Length: 177
Image (cartoon, rainbow, N blue to C red):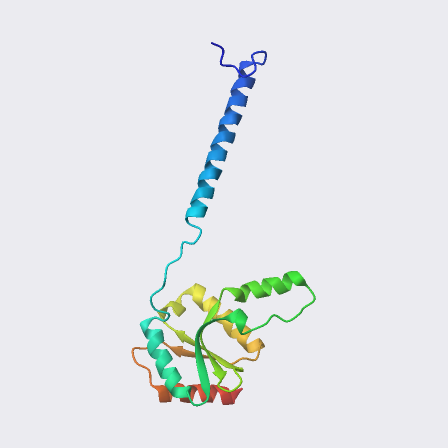
């Protein structure tokens, strides 16, 4: 029995062709399997039970209590929904600048109750902000907010929060600008 694909070709060429076909069929099987898995896991999402960590929730409640007369407090807002990229005449540079803020969030945003104007960003810094990558991220965010002329007020994470202290620090920062 002759197993050669092309009997008149050399054995080496036939082996090469068989290996090529084997790789081709294996690749097709992998692609089909991957397509099946992609379809099967097209929506691999699950609910996160709480929108805020316990510390963020406690701070949020104290923050809201401290500024409720003047402002609304929005938690976890994407920075790209607060800051726009200025036209610099180079689309590539504009997209790069946008991408630097597109996936970053700010912990809280204060907006005017009447017209929803953005008043300030508020960050709650826990121990993770001591990591080098977070320090660099925070420097970038601070600079971006400064350049955009949006006050960014930082608070250290704590077990308990005093709404009067939070209010005082916020209004102090807002009158500095």
